[in-house]
Structures are given as C-alpha cells and as structure tokens.
Length: 102
Image (tube, rainbow, N blue to C red):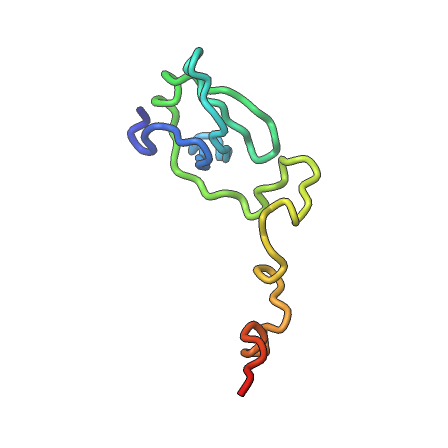
C-alpha cells in the first residue's frame, strides 16, 4: 500500500510527483493484480500492485476537461441538463414556480 494515497480506487485521479503525470485508475485485473490506469491524454497503462506502493503518488484533481481522452463525447452524454449549465429564465424568480390561480 502506498503510504500517502493508500490503495488505488477506481475513478480517482492521482499524480506522480516525480513525473508530474496525472492519471485515473480505471480498473483492476484481479488475475494479474495489475492496476489499470488512463492518462489524461488517453494512453492506457498498467501498474503492478507491488510497484504502486513504491511510486511517489499524491491524490490528484480531475482535469477541467476530463472528457478529452474520450472519443466524440456529446454534451448530452455527460448527464447534464440544459438548465444545469444554462438556466433559461434564471433572472426570473418565478420561472420555475408556474402559474398561481387565485
């Protein structure tokens, strides 16, 4: 186990302090005990479990545009609604309330 970051967690981002490379753990191969990683640029690699504990790692932040290594991602595929990113009628406080009948 790496003393600073502990065991690898799928979906988490890490940075190698010696190289400045940021990567995400994307899986584990239970048979070979390898940790599958993907660099921000899209390259995929494996790290042996024994090597993980020796690497100078720290917890990393996901890049601002974490979709860069993915092929042709449409904004609709990210799970955001238009209202979450571009709220129509945001300046109108009653926009989402509807009509009140009296």
